[in-house]
Image (tube, rainbow, N blue to C red; front, side):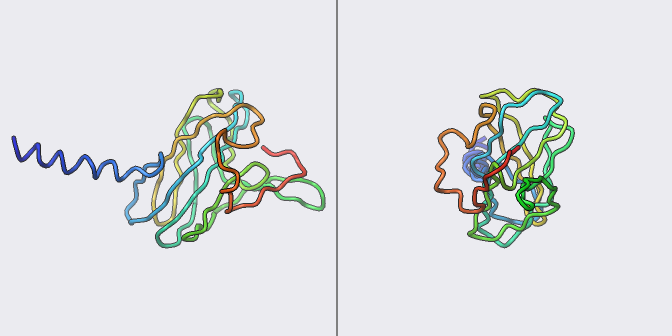
Length: 173
């Protein structure tokens, strides 16, 4: 009984160490992926939604290769680009993540598009988003829903958005 208690006391801090900033990692290779500032905008069921976040790698370089969430029929990485004065959205198949260079998905830039929402995303709600990385495997984070049309996550430090500059001039998802 004492051995079991001793093992439990050692294992508890290690279990807490596996969780990184609201993200849980499950992959074969060791990686130092951190997911922060995960948020979405309120949206109606059956429509499109969006997720924004910051990815930081402190270990070896990695690549974001896919995204899933139970709240949408399909999720994918997209970017908004200015094509001769016309703002357009296009899918992005992969996103390189370099050590020490946070990548921030923001309104008007790169973002996660949620297609065919299975439920309404209401302000104050939260839902899981699973990001797939080439080396780190799957990392699940929790997105918090802000009001419809929100330009940034409430309470977020806007000066810390160094991975992707804000792009303006057009309608963002």
